Image (cartoon, rainbow, N blue to C red; front, side):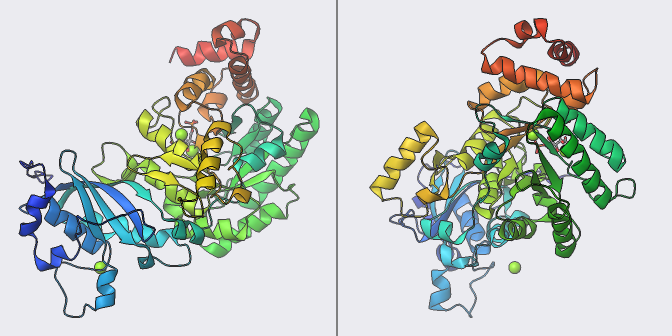
Length: 484
Ligand code: CAP
Ligand code: MG
Ligand code: MG
Ligand code: MG
C-alpha cells in the first residue's frame, strides 16, 4: 500500500522565519542572502519540493542540498574549510509553489565536461531520500565557465539541411514499423518505399540492435543498397539514423565504423543512441568520436522521470538541456500533446525552444548558451538579433553553444503536421512518423507521399482538406487517420 504522502502546508510567507529551525548541519547548506547566484560561481537548479514527515521545507531543502553536493545526514568531523566551500546552497524558496532554488559551486563537477556526473548529484541519491514526497528538477542554469567545459552539439540540423537542401520546412522522417521482426531485406524495402515516396529521413527504432532475424551488418548493407536506389531514382539526398546503442562501447563503436565503412556519404547517416538506457557516457562518447555526424538522442524510458504527473524526476526541459550540453544534435522533445505520448504542450514547447535558441526562458531561468560572460553587451545584441533572424548565432563562430534540434514523433501522422507546427511555432525540427506513414491504407510509399503533401499544403497555406481534393494520398490519409 503506497505510503500516505504527508506534508505540511506552510502558514507563513517568508522562508526566513524557518531559519531558527535549522540544525548546524542544515545551516551549512543554506544562504538566503546569496548576493548574485548568476555571478558565474554556481550552476543553478530549481526543484519542485514537497517535504514528507516532520521536517519543514527549509530543513528538507537543506538536506537535499547536502546530499546532492558534499554532505550526508550529519555534520561530520572530517569536514575541512575548503570542503565546506563546495557545499551547495539553498538560496531561495517560493513558499507558495514549493519551488526551491539551489546553487552548486561549479568546481563540484568533473572538469572534463561530464553530464553523467552532474546528474549523479542533482538527480541521484536525492530521489531516494525519505524526507521528500516530491522532488522534481524543473530547470537548470549553467554558468559560462561550465559551457566552456562541455562539448555541445557539433553537427547540427543546419548541417543536415545543407546536405538535404531542405530549408523552409521540417525534415520529414519515419520509423519503420512493425518496430521489430522484419528481416534486413524487408526492413530496407520499407526504407526504400518511404524515400521514393518523398521522405528525407528514416530512423532505426529504439530497440533496433543485432537481432538474429535482422543481423546488424545485413541491415546496414541492405539499407545502403536501398538508399542508393532511392537517391538515384529521386535525385534527392537522404539520411538514415542508425541505432548504435550496444552492450559496450567497443560494440557501439564497431557499429559506427561498420556504417562509416559501408560507403555511406558523409551527411547521409546519423547515429541514434538510446540516451536514457545506454547512458550519458554513450552520448558523450559518440559526440567526441564523431563530431561530423548527427547524434540523435532517443529518450525511451524518460517518462519515468519526466511525465508531468511524476512527483520525483526531472522535466523534459532539463533532460533536453543536458542532451544539448552533452552534444546531441537532436533529441526527441515530445509532441506537445498532439501525438500519442503523455506530455504537456507547454513542457514540450519550452524544451524544444530551450535547446534551439541562444537565449531562452526556461521554467525558472533565462539561459544564455554563450561561451562568454553574459555581460558582453554585443553578444546579447547578437543573441537578440538571433532570436529574430535565427541566423546569427546558430553556429559556433558566434561563440555560442550550437543548437540542438527537436525530434518529434510519437503518434503523429500527416493530418497532425500542421497542428503540431502551430503549437511549436516554427518548422525547425525533424519529424519522424512511424504509424503515421506505414499505417496508411496504401502502405509506406503512399504514406510518405501523404506526409509530403501535408507539408506542401502547409507551405502553401492551404487547408489539408482542400489540398487533398486533388491529392489522393493525402485524401486517404485524412480519411484513415481522422476517423480514428
Ligand atoms: C514513434 C516511436 C518513437 C516515439 C518516441 C515509437 O512511433 O518510434 O520511439 O515517438 O517518443 O516507438 O513509439 P510512431 P518520443 O510514430 O508510430 O508513434 O518521441 O515522445 O520520445
Ligand atoms: Mg552517498
Ligand atoms: Mg520508436
Ligand atoms: Mg515524439
